[in-house]
Length: 341
Image (tube, rainbow, N blue to C red; front, side):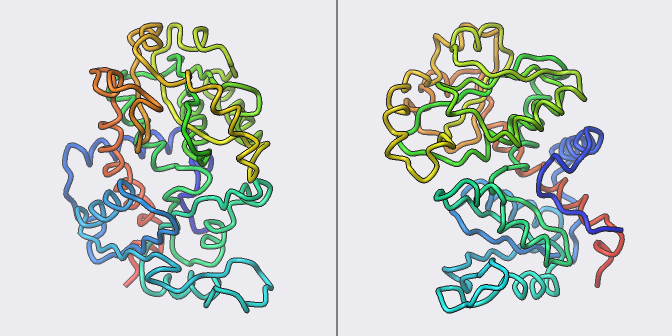
């Protein structure tokens, strides 16, 4: 049987996603367990983290496991990922050795590695996490690369807790202004999970340049077709917000300007009014608001929105702890993994 990783929710069926959410809900009711007793996980952070690191470390501890945190290039050797390269630069060791050695030490490997933001045709290949999965002999978990599947599950769990059945609920994934161009990972993931759960999804963005990579748009369309939902793109704020049950905000950079951000900046600056405020939320059908965090108040969303009863961003953030326990526990159930001595 092939080793199973948790790299993207697209590798998981709707039934498997539902099962993970059910397990996460169970962990939320009863946080402690022994599913990771005697087991360990290596957490490799190529980028900063607050919620992800805290929730994974605590999650492993709550289930009896041990987490080891590494920051390659800082407290661990820089790593080379290209095959066949002459390693005469900064990198001291190759992923082929790193992943296999860690696999001899730990039972799970989790990786956080953002795009380089220089060439989307390269970054979209997600080489770092795929290289770990290629060489590791234990399950690999995506802690955010060009998608953020753990955030997806936390978001989905929060929505289910507040809305119950999500089928055909109107879901608005809205771009928001940010002074810097950001990763599309959370937006890609929100699109994937909302369509997989059968919601009627509207991607709201300022111009066509901000539509997400066609890979995720096509996956969203397929998810919607398979699960009875829908997906459309809108550039009309009032039309998108009208009657929405969920508004999920995120800022991201326009892919046609990837690596040329100064050329994109005037477009971003012209659309500061996409910030989520009370007037926009008043157009919804008593809609919920959420964000993956961190969020710049009064830039992405106003204080009034963040402090409103309909804001569930803190619930979603808490759920990171519970869904990651479910992911870790499920991966260790694979034959030959959880029983390894």
